[in-house]
Image 1: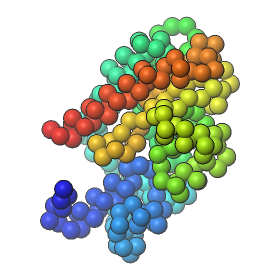
Image 2: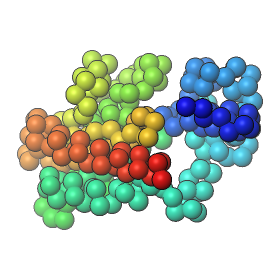
Image 3: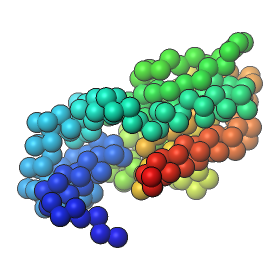
Image 4: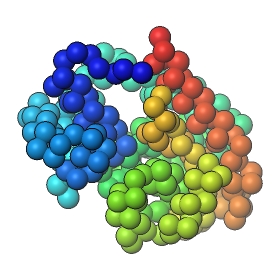
Length: 240
């Protein structure tokens, strides 16, 4: 399929933005992800940065910029967030545990939507919370399908290993037990863009006494189904 619009510079800028969809990238990462010549990739990234469509993280890597979020909010077209509410509420009702949707933002993951368990002992994570990428099942999912360079960086000082991430890619979901916080367990699965990139993670989390030391046995099917519903909503929106 030919993705060319006939406007070369716009097509190349779109390649840069698409490469950043999966997370932060060095210039070398942009070159590898886009196939553009190094000077071209650098020139476009800097130009997009000027317009706030691209930004830099604390390590100087290129990331998607704040202007994209502003445009999305203005248009009301964030399909993922629009679909997340009912999907997370259903997941909460099926599992009886709090459900969250996470996106990666630089070296952190941000809770962008949540459905809380209404009563009893729960793992409360307010929307907007920023947590580390070094621990937790959502962090594992958001890192497991990264390119080797990003994965290697992400594994430094992480509570999980490359072997664990390989297992997650094989079975399609992650679990953690007391990894992020003592006494808390969670299960997460990936949400994918229409192009197949992992762009978010759906999770359920709660006290270890309810989820046990093998929370995936209890809740992986429900979490996987919720992630697939969100991925399917993005595919439908892209085909409209």
